[in-house]
Length: 170
Ligand SMILES: [Fe+2]
Ligand SMILES: [Fe+2]
Image (cartoon, rainbow, N blue to C red):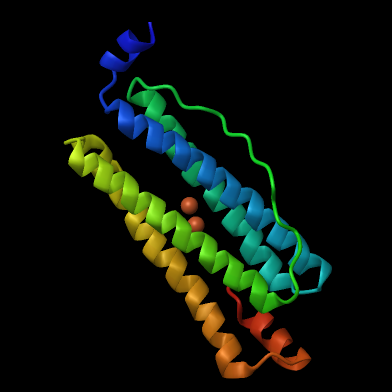
């Protein structure tokens, strides 16, 4: 039965597998950003909190985009289980460094999906992933811009307040 379903898919079985892994990753990123929002709220970094709440929503929308794509292609999207969310940060800078590390991991995973699509001549998936490549460039850039503020303004109490005030909340 499973093999018949797979034959009716307009994407390759290996693409479906890596896209399901990506659903898991986007979902974990969403949950992880929520934890960051919570830390920022508790530490009175209001704009940073809003930034991470918005990121959490975005990651959820990325997850849904892939989820729908798999099902619309005749595949089987798997609802992910998310565990081990870190809530423990020692500073605002550490929160943003962790966010950047997470985005870099996502970028690598997305590049891997594209590489796999190319290898298997899965043009539908290669085309679908272009939007994600652009999106990753944008997200990495916005977090790097925030990290630059720590270099420019420092890390004392006043500097952290000013950095938080500068963070765009969309
Ligand atoms: Fe994402
Ligand atoms: Fe992201």
